[in-house]
Image 1 (tube, rainbow, N blue to C red):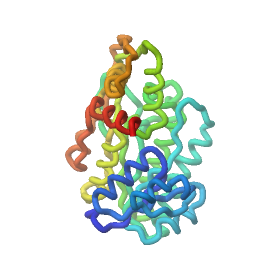
Image 2: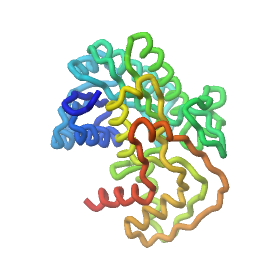
Image 3: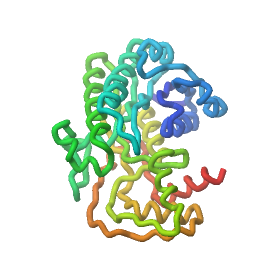
Image 4: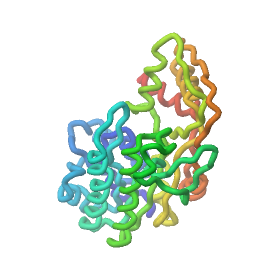
Length: 306
C-alpha cells in the first residue's frame, strides 16, 4: 500500500505518539483520520488537516463507525502510565480487550490492513543481550520480578504481551493483514512522561544519573517505521523492534541539558549494565533510522522553546 491518497485511521491520535504518527502519515500524502474521545482535545490535529472521528476504546461500535471507509488502521490507543500504579485489570481492559476491540472493529468496518503499536515490554529482558524479535516473551509468573522492570512496570508488560498475542490470533481468525511495531521507551518534545521526568531532574544545580544502557527511541522515528510498514507489504505478518539506540540516563540528561542550555551539572553514577534490542529488521524493511539522543534532545528543546 503506497500511502499517497490512502485514508488511514489512527487511534489514540491525541496522545503523545499519536500526534507524531498523524504528522508522519500526512507528510507521506495520506488522508488521516484521528480517532479520539474528545474532538476538542484534538483541535490542534484538525489544524494540521487531520479529520477527527469520535471513537472510544471501550466501545467497539463507535470504533466501527470511526474506521468505516478507511484503507488501514493504526491501532495505537493503549494505557501506559508513569508515576502511578493502576491495577492490572485497568491495563488489561485497555491493552488486551481494547486491543481486541480495535482489530474486531477494523474487520467489521471492512478494513484489512492494521498496524499495532505494541512494545518491547513484551519481552523477558536479559542483561548484556541484544534482543531480537524471536526472543522469549514475558509471562505473569516472572513479570513481577523480571528484568523487564528496568524499562517498564510488570502490569504494563504482561498486558502488552497478552494484547499482542490476542492481536495475532484475531488477525488469523479475521483475515487481517497485521504488522506489530515494538517501540522502546519513547521520548520527544510533546512527551509528558519520560521526557518530562528528565526535564524536571535538570531543575536543580546538580543531577545524578546512572550510566546503565537502556533503549531510547524518539516518537518521530517510531512514526517513520509505521509509515514504512504501511508502504511496504513485506511487513505484513511480522513484528519489528523499534527500540532506538542504547543510551544511558546520564547521556540522555547530558544531551537534554546541553540542548536546553541548562546550568545543571549532570554527574554519572557508574552502573555497568545494559539492555539492548535488535532494530535491524526495521532498518532493512521499514526505512527506520533512529536518531541519536543528541539529535532527539535538540527536537525536544525546539518544542519547549516554541
